[in-house]
Amino acid sequence: LSVMGFMDQLKEQFSFSELTGLYQSYKSGELDVDKILNDTFMQKYTDFENVEALMTKLGIQDKDQLMDFMKDRSNRHHADQVVKDHSQFDSLIEMIKKALGK
Image (tube, rainbow, N blue to C red; front, side, top):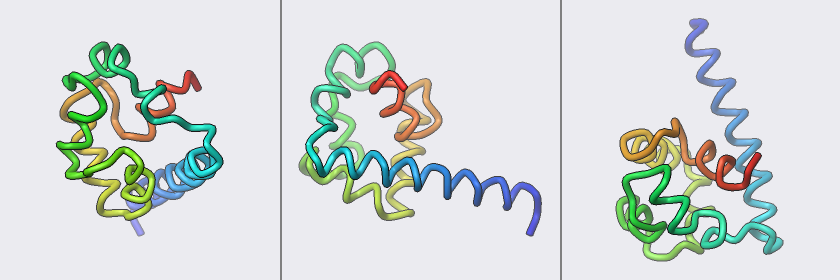
């Protein structure tokens, strides 16, 4: 296992544990995707008009599906690439953390 591979794995586990935390907040109703990824935030930090435009780009019908979508690793990589291409963030989780003010 190369050092880079190890770092990627570490990052993957780190982002997954963060995701799990976000997912639990989401399930308990503490995380409102609409509120945190509001139009003002999206327009300031991304190329998207609003969170719906991001969802469309990801192929998600409904914001409520976002967290379930993110549980899948290949979806997560896809989402991270979209975020990387259209914002100043490296990953969707980084973007959500910024939106949460963490």
